[in-house]
Every structure is written in C-alpha cells, then in structure tokens.
Image 1: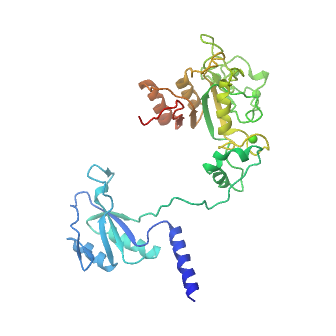
Image 2 (image 1 turned 180 degrees about the vertical axis):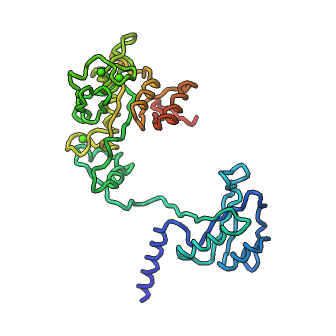
Image 3 (image 1 turned 30 degrees about the vertical axis):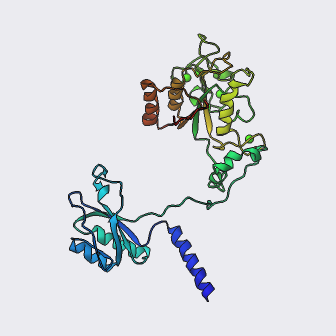
Length: 354
Ligand SMILES: [Ca+2]
Ligand SMILES: [Ca+2]
Ligand SMILES: [Ca+2]
Ligand SMILES: [Ca+2]
C-alpha cells in the first residue's frame, strides 16, 4: 500500500509539474495610485492594512505575502501595470485549477487591486516530449552540431509531416553560391517576377535582358552578384563564384547555404538545419579576391533579399565597425520587412569581452 501511495504522490508531482504553474500561488497588482502594502505577520500569517485583502488572505490560508520583483521600481510600468506593485501570495496548500481561478478572481475584484494572475513554473528541459527525426543523409552521423542544438527533435515536431518549409526564405549574403551543387540546386529561391514562363525553372527563355519585376536588377532570377567579376567590373546576375583560391575561400557562401538549407533526407551529403528552406543568395565578392574575400555592398544585398521576402538574412561576416547608415539598414529590414539579420560573432581570434 505504501508503495502505491508513494507512486501516486510521484505521479501527482509529475502531473503538477506538467501543469506549468504554481497551484499554491497567485500574483496581484495594486492600482497605480495605491501605496505599497504594509505587510506584517501575526501567528505566521501575513496581514496588511487593507481589511478586504486580509479577509481573502485568511480565507485561503496565505502563508506568504511579498513583492514579486525585488528589481522593480516606479520606472517599470507597462500599460496600467506598475511592476513594483505586483505581489505574490503563497497559500498553505495547493488548489485545483478551478479553485485557483476563483481565488485569482476574488483578489482581482478587490477595489485596491488592478488585476491578478498565476505564476508559471519554468524548467530547463532535460528531454523533449517528442521523438527526434533522423534524416538519411550519408554524412548526418558526422553532423554532431545538429544534435547539439537538438535540431533532430525540432524536426520531429513536424511529425508525421516532412520537417521545415520551402516557404521560409533565407537570405544568404556571402560569396555567392554554386547553384550547380547537387545539394544546393533545389534549394535556391527562384524569383517568380523574373521567371518569364512561370515554370519554376531558369531556362533560356527567362534570360530576356528585361527587369521583369521592376526591382532594378535585370534577370535576377536567382539572386544578384553585387560585386561583379572584378573590382570596377559591372554587376551581373551570376551568383556562382569561381572555384579558386588555395583554401577555396570563395566557396564560403555555398558552404553556409548548405548548412542552412542543403537538401535533406536525400541519402546524399548532409542534412541542413532548416531541412528545406529556400535560399536567396547574393554574391558579394570579386572572382579574383581569393585570399581573404571582402564583402562588397553587403548592406545593399541585405536590403535586396529582404525586399524579395527573406525573413532570415544570414551574414557570416563582419568587421570592426557598424556605422549609422549601416545600422539603419538593419533597422529597416527588421521594422519594415520583418526580417531577422544574423551576423557572425567574430572569427578573428580575439576575445570580444576585452
Ligand atoms: Ca522559367
Ligand atoms: Ca529584376
Ligand atoms: Ca528578365
Ligand atoms: Ca543531403
């Protein structure tokens, strides 16, 4: 019998934990013009100068009444809520959800109180609730970082559907992309405004030398080469870099695009973190800049991909400065195009803390 009771207690604790909020607590916020409560304890029970409140504290057997936030002061006002006037009430025992809702509503109904609510229980999750999804790509077993960030469990959330979505557009502002790469060719976004015959393919008919979508870039059916082949050379619509340089530096954009969106679950190569997002790639390096390629017109390219619909814009590059108009671009794409720009945190072998 003891074992059964023990099991039931464990089960109840598990269920309570699952419920996600404290069953023996209520938070309430005083009205803005209400002075702070003078809390004192009588027979280890909290009391205040407010008779109405004392009745509820006694009725539901409160054992603690305290300010919820030690860090809050009169600067922390959100709408009608002055966060420094939020109090936590803790009761002797736990209540059912319906009882706690009733208690919350009774506190909220007091004339001195603005509102009342529950308090959540939060965890560092030790294990996800769903099954992981393991793609069949041949090198997936070597991609330890995907398991490290629990991408496999994130993919599993789509079950039984295929993970990810080709409707998610990711801008990759980098050294261009080898669009003939077998893991890349199917993940590049085709600009429908330049796909003249609307077949989702880029063929000779689409190269009509006309800016069909009127965005200022002629035949930019798969991104744009903002740098052009050499310094001083004309920009063009070919985002494919040459395979040059001792360390193949110009393949950086292809590498990055693969990490983000390489075709996954195709028994070939790697799986990508997004599984099957589409990439809007730009080329921002010169073909002959093979030692340490500089990013040419990177901010223009950020805006370009945002205007085509990229909601995430990857910039695996950086420098030592961010000047005002450059910051304006980041704010523009965030505020006006709803895009998140992700930048490198530094590959320059020094501590960013100093
Ligand atoms: Ca076409
Ligand atoms: Ca165009
Ligand atoms: Ca065209
Ligand atoms: Ca693959």
